[in-house]
Length: 635
Ligand code: WTA
Image (tube, protein in one colour):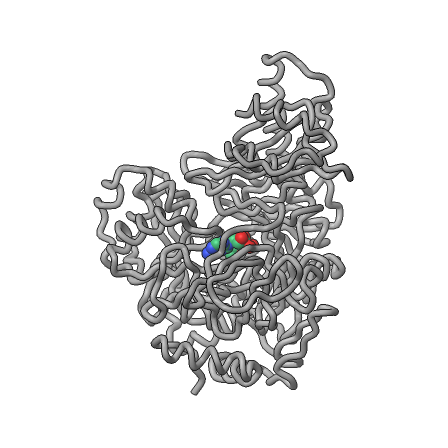
C-alpha cells in the first residue's frame, strides 16, 4: 500500500524519509496505485540540474482528463464535480456533476477539433471564472492541446505578448465579465490584442454579459451553438508522460514574462497527492479555493488536483466585497464549505471590516483553512484562526510557486502542528536547502538563507517556453546543481520553514507577482519621462505596494505633475494591467546609482518604506547628493 493519505506526524516522518531515500519507488508506488495509465513508464526519473532536464514516468501513456473525469463516472458520476457560484448572488449557483462535466468537456473538445486544433497546438484562454473556463482547460487536455490561460484582468498588451510568445492558434474568451458591481468588456480587449497576433485564426466567444461586441467574420464564433451541435463523445488523446499540458506565464525580475511549461504525468501525480494530504479531503467534503484559474493556484488546486481526487470543487466568479464584505462567509454557509483556501491579502482586507460580516454566517462546516501567495503576517493568521476557524480548523500556510506546479512546504491538517507565519515542513519528496551568499549550503537549525531545492519533484516546470537558456539562467545558475526559488527563508529550531519573501526584483502586490522591469518600461515609454525605478514598500492590506521614482525630461510645475501621474497610471494599466499601478509616484531629479551605473534599489526601498535611519554607506555612490533630495520630498 502506498502512503497516499498521511494520517499522523510519525507517519509523515516515515514517509518523508522514504521519499528521500528511495524517491523513485516512493513516487512509482503512488502513481501505480492511484491513477489510470494506458501504458506504464519505462523509467521513473531521469534528471540533470546542470542541463537542466527532468523527466518523470518516461514513456508512460495517459490522458489527464481520463484521470480527472472518466475514471470517476462509474463510482461517482452523479456527484458534484464543480459548484459554480456566480458574481451576483441572486443568480442561481450551478452544480455540475462528473457525468455532466464529462459531456461538456467532450463537446468542447470536439469543437476545438472542428476548428483544426490538434495535439501540441497552443490555445489561449482569456475568460472570467465561469464554468466554460474549466471546460476549456480540460477540453484542451482532452485532445493534447496546450492551454495557456491568461488572467482576465490583464491588459490587451499583456494578452498580446503572451499570445504571441506561445504562438497560439486559437483564443477562447467571452463577451464580458462581471466583477462585483462592474462589467468589463473582454472581447474588446481581445480584439485589440489580436491586432498584433495574426496567427490566431479562430476566436470562440462565450456569451456571459450580453455586451455589445464586434464579431469578426471568418474568425469569431459564439461557442454555444457549436457546443449544441457537437457530439458529447470524444475519445481522449493518449499522450506521453512528458508531453506538455500547459503554459502559464509568470513575471520575472527582468524582461518579458516567462511561459512556464508543465508536462502531464508528474504534474498530475503531484497535484493530486498534495491536494489529498494538504486539504485532508474526504468524500463528501466541499472544497473552495478562492483563486482565479488564471493563476497557478487555480490550475492545480481548483481544477486538476481536486478533480483527480474526485472531489467537489467550488468556482467563484465574483469578488469578496460584493454585494458586501460578508460574501465569502455567505458562500461558506450556503455551500457548507469544508476546506477554504485563500490569500493573505483577502484575509487582511476582510479583517478590517466589521466583525458582523463574519458573525452573521454559520461557518461550522469548516474543517481546514488555507493560505497562499505571500507570507501571512501574524495578525492576519490569528484573525483567520480565531474568527473563521474558531480555533479548531488548522491553517495550512502553503508555500509554492508557478514554477513548482504544486505545494512544496506546508503543514498537513491534523498531522503537522501549526505555527503562525510558518509554512512548516516540506511535503514528501521535497528536499529544501538554505544557501548563503557564497553558494554554500547552511546546515543545522535556527538559520536563514536563500531557499533552494536540491532534488527534482514530479511537478517541477520543465522549461521556459521557447527559451531554455532563460530557464537555466533563472533557476539553475545561481547555486550550482540546485533549483533556486528566488525566495528567502529561515529554519527554526525544530526544522520548520518560514518564508521571508522575494530576494529579487519581483514584488508581490495583493498576491500578484509583479516584475519591476516591465512596469518601469511602461513608465519610461511616456514621452515626458527620462528614467524610473519601481520598488515595493509594506502595505497593511496588499502586503506590498509599489512606489515609483520618476525622473522627468523637464521638470514641470505641480499641476502638470498631477496630470502626469494620471497618464503614467494609464500607461501602466494599458501595458501591464491595473494591478501594477503604483500607490505613489515621486518625481525626482536623479536616482542613486553605483559607479557602474546600476540603480541602488536597496536605498530606494528604504526611502519608500520610510525607514531612512540606516541607509548604509552612500559615499561610494556616483551621485550621493541625490539621496538627501529624494528623502526631503518623499511621499
Ligand atoms: C510567494 C503562487 C510566503 C513566494 C502559488 C513565491 C509565499 C511566490 C507563499 C510565487 C507562502 C507563495 N508564504 N510566500 N505561503 N506562497 N509565496 O508563482 O515569494 O504566483 O516565490 O505562485 O509567492 O508566486 P506564484
